Image 1 (cartoon, one colour):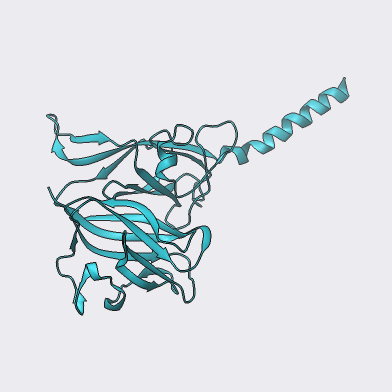
Image 2 (cartoon, rainbow, N blue to C red; image 1 turned 135 degrees about the vertical axis):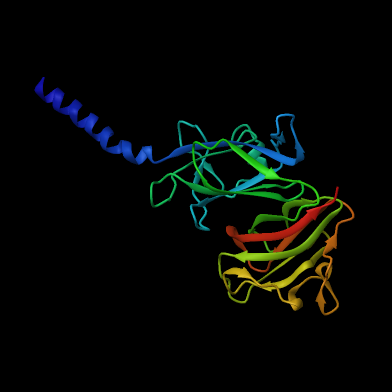
Length: 268
């Protein structure tokens, strides 16, 4: 009998010691809304839910390191690719039309927070969410017309072919400028960015030798954003809904390389 109790105690102790490692994982979720202007009668913003067409990236608090994600609320740990695609966002098997995931935050202070980049690909509008945790359940993307917006979308080099970034600039959008934030230095490699059928119309062979924000020179600016030997003062106006493509001349399968930043405004 004594031997039996010793065995039971050993099993309980083993589970007790394992518990803290499991407790570090947190299930986080938030519904996504867009604000296009206007107020309700009580003075609150008029918000509309967004349950499809959203991609999001989960980053370590205060860093550009992608967190390791798993599917929200499962009994087993099922990997969730980060950045999270629009397909997985909408899927009932993964995110169910909202920002949701399981993560062990690498927040060094209290293992609690992550940072989010949430983009509505129908227009390219983006919300930056700092210090997101399991207690935050609402994300609002500012999509007002006639306001200068800063949008962001992740890029990789899973192929050397022109790759649709997933962002569609809407008819009447004025694109002011585009900038690459490169996270992985690739010696002698370049990135181009442009419209379908005009793969270098925004950025033409920008060097990826360095990391950080790359200052685009006039020589690497595409024809849509420059006029002769100078930058186009009024930007580029999209006359129809237009998808944007990136091309990196080095294949790194499924590698998260960085972000494309774009500054734009949408007409009425």
